[in-house]
Length: 353
Image 1 (cartoon, rainbow, N blue to C red):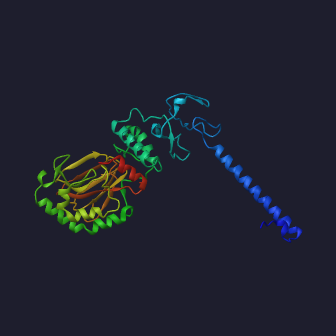
Image 2 (cartoon, rainbow, N blue to C red):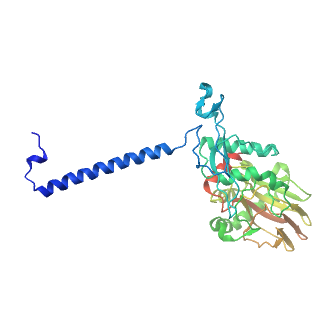
Image 3 (cartoon, rainbow, N blue to C red):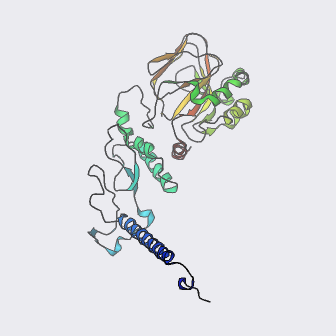
């Protein structure tokens, strides 16, 4: 049976209210449809540019096509697949506060021609990573790669020669709070780590025993992780140290920027002024340090304390000198606390061993 409003014995003012409510609902529906239409019409269309949408200081997105486009008339051969797009990232000049946040665009912009072969390789790796995952959070890495050439030409106290991540707060020495958990784990296992080193040291220092001689005379390394690659034989010789490394939250063990092992510097030997490869890591030092041994980083002298960790940013200019017995440290590379998780994942991909 069909029911209608006319069959209901409603007063006249109720009927007027029902019709008014129906009219309001229709009005809201029409406004919503009009809003959706406007939103859809404002979306950018490839090959078209809306006047006033782009600032003159920013670079416009361009899509390379096999054909040519004039206005809205394009060659039929200009159909592109997704893999044909050249993805890069652009930005204008820094804002008033010296910060520029990059966003992915489609552009013809090329990597600086004067960049080194290693820089171009890293840039290609970043593009491959972004294509596979996302550009989200890659702004600082992209900016650092493009400015690495200029960074190498500067005469500064901090100059990593491989990769510099911009906008990262840096000081020569970091407080313990930067990596409190990892420092407490290392210091808690200090006695076991020292005992394993003494056992390895007494066994003899030669290549067959796992030692590697580097740098000046009297400097030797017993690596457990070398450029992100585990050294199985040395790890078996120091099982407690190996388990301690694996329990660290910020240990860099998945890319070539990270290493860990025992470093020995003979009596009277010195390490001249040098820079580390990147500012995305901190070096943690632990073990036996003889008296009259000094580390100078970024012009700031610092002395070790036996059994306690020291966090150093080795991307600063640093030197080591001592005049007493051999200096022995367990050196562990940890992530810089201001490197985000997405950036760490991208750097693992770019610097994969």
